[in-house]
Length: 154
Image (cartoon, rainbow, N blue to C red; front, side):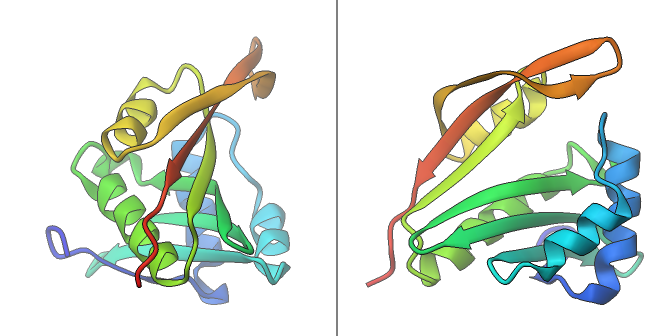
C-alpha cells in the first residue's frame, strides 16, 4: 500500500481505463483492440494500481511455465515519479514468486532512462539489445532486454 494506492488483478472492466492511461503515457500506445486481444490470451494477466480516484496504472504480463514477460506497464503521467511504478512492479514480482515463476523478462526503450533506472533499482539486469524495435515519430529506437531472477517461495 502506498499513498492510499492498492494493487489488484485487472478485469475486463478495466480495459478502457488501461487504454486511456496507455494513450496518455506512451509514445506509441497500444490501441483498445490490442488491450482486448491481449486479455483474451489465457497466458496473459494484468495487475492494476488504483486509489479512490480510480486507476493509476497497470501491468500486463504473460506467464509461460516458470518464466514471465512484462508486456506493458504504465502509470498516469500526473502520478509518475511518486513510487507507484515501483509499487506495481514489486507487487507483480511478489505475485509471480508465489506462483513459482523463477525469471521475469522485459524490454524497454533504450531512451527511457527513468524506466531503466527503476528496473535496475529493482534488481533487473541487462541481457541484450533488440535493434530498431520500437517505432518513433522520426524513426525507430532499440529495445534494451532485461531480466530478473526470482526466488521461489518454498
